[in-house]
Length: 373
Image (tube, rainbow, N blue to C red; front, side, top):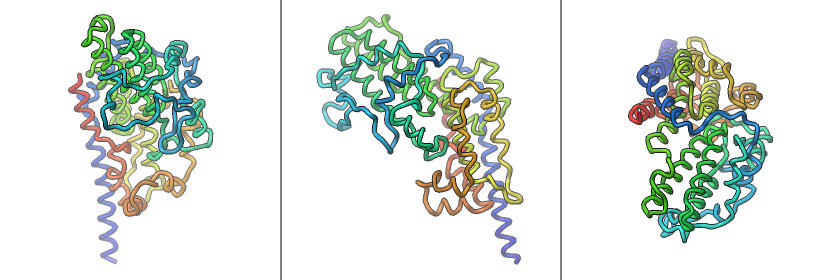
């Protein structure tokens, strides 16, 4: 009897240790200030003004977008076909544009007629969503937009070949602008990669005397870092690394200039990860409700198209037993067993998903974001 009580006591202590460990890893006020300052700097650039989401570019782009690990895109043009990563033509789009893939890229010029992208509205990913697939779990698939990165490279190569670089830069910027409006958590990251392609193309054109340096303003490495890490930092803040007051302070200072809805979606995924483990609390297990305060405030505020529907709530209707096969399909059997054990599961949570359910080192991101400023 005494041994059993001792084991339970150790398990309870470990559970509370996991909860306390998460509490001590929250963002500092300095790091919250860095996030606010980074968003102010991005807002000054004016790259991505708010959109009314009236004209969906999905009819143009979604046929080129597949589903991660599940389904290819409906259309794979010659310039989007897989190529060996190694070999003499890996960076041909930049270093030897004559060897770069060619094809019809006129669809990029059409993007000026649209104000947003919804990858869920049509194409392979649209059908994936319509099938009832879970979108807000750690193992959920995302739209794969690698073909659009290849389109950006092919368009830059086309401009370098012809000497008409400025129109190519305009087309690639339009692609980044549209990608940034999609509310999937990965789309802002793809948009930043497209802006990096644009910058490299600009630098190559200036270096070869094809373009005056003052003819175009690329997004700097510093601002690209602000964009990428800002989304991740907000996702962590909403997932429990920040308080409702931290989020209110951010909003009062002007809010997010980039990627807010993607970050909200990532934080919902994190909450679902925790709910799987703690939906039915045992006596003396810690209450993780404090980690939901900032996210609840963001959801109540709205401002994201996906929040107007119910798709983001569908995981909330599933029991822990129903969620486990979906959410832990790639985890080890031993870890899954621990995550099903009362008390020990809250200690194991940070090892399974990171401190706040996302699996990323929030303190490292915050430091990098501060250094980017």
